[in-house]
Every structure is written in C-alpha cells, then in structure tokens.
Length: 246
Image (cartoon, rainbow, N blue to C red; front, side):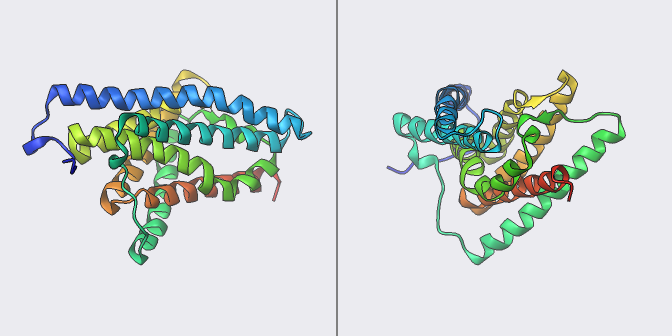
C-alpha cells in the first residue's frame, strides 16, 4: 500500500498532528528508556573485560551502548507501529558523496559560527559529558562516530521522528519539529548552567535543521548519517589534539 507523505492537499489537520506528534514523542521516550537499559549492560561488559571504570575503553563502550539503545528503540518502534515505510534509504550516488563533503563543511562552519555569535553576546554552551574523557576515547570515536552515534541519532530523529511528522506537517514542519526534539535531548547531555545548556540546545537544534534538510533534499538517510558522523569525527579529532597536547 502506498502511503502519501505530508498533509493532504496542503492542509494541516490537528488530529493528524496530534497522532504523528504523539508517535514522534513516544519514539524519543522509548529511546531514552532503551538507553537507560542498554548502557549499564555495555558498561558491565567493559568492566568484565578488565577495563577500569574511568578508562577510555569503558567510555567508548558507554557511548556505543547509548547509540545501540537509540538504534534498537527506533527500529523496534517502527516495527511495532508498522511504519517502516517512513524510512528513506537508497544506494548513494556520486552526487550524494559531493553533498556529504559539502554538508560536512557547511555544518562545521555553521557550528563554529553559531558559537561565535553566542560568544559575542557573552553566552557559551554547556560541555557535553563525552568531552571530559581521556584522549584515547576521542581517537577511538573518530571512526566509531560513523558506525554508532550518527547511525543511532539519525535513525531516530531524521528517520523516525522526521518521518512521522512529515505525514502531518510536510517536509518543512517535520524538519523543524525533529530538530527541536533533537536539540532538547542535548539539554540533558551537557554539563553546566541552565543558560549554557539552552545555548547547547540551540546549537544542536540549528545543526539538526541542516541534517534534516539534507535528508529531505537527498531522499536517503545515508547522507545525513555520513554528514553527522563526519561532523562528530571532526569534533573528536580536535578534542584529541587538544587533550593530547599536540
């Protein structure tokens, strides 16, 4: 059965918004619950293998567990809801590869530009807890960012949340809604004052708009996954160089 995406005839129906919005929120809630259940198991495995509680290896296991929770929750939600058709995935093309490079550069520039804009008015973002880890953690996460974090977060927020919202709000509304939820989730990931956390939310939500737009433009989840992974890899590389004193 073919499912028409977006509001019918350009109109937005409150009932459809409530249903799809509720499903999007439920998916995010399910992901948070899944992370709470999966991460301790990954940490236990790291400790059982002999890694210290504060070691880089255990931190990597924790991050991978977080991404695994997101991925599992997103896929199980779509299977349970029977909405696998909201996912858009196809084989990447040469044009997609060019968009990945351009999108990554654009996202990195936008990220630093937003931070500079906030800095100009005396505001700074909170620090992601992941950035407090040892140098070896950042080195390991450069390749793993493509395989774990980017896959889990993009599958949930662009694939599931944006996909569900698209059916009621159309592409633009779906990108805005998914990006807002993406940003809000980063509130709990940061350490700092409430104001600093809100700045972090604004930065993440703005970058989410770029990822969401790429998804709609390319019609494949592969592109935002690769761009997200590359963006994170750049951040990890910079952090590694700083913490390693290179």
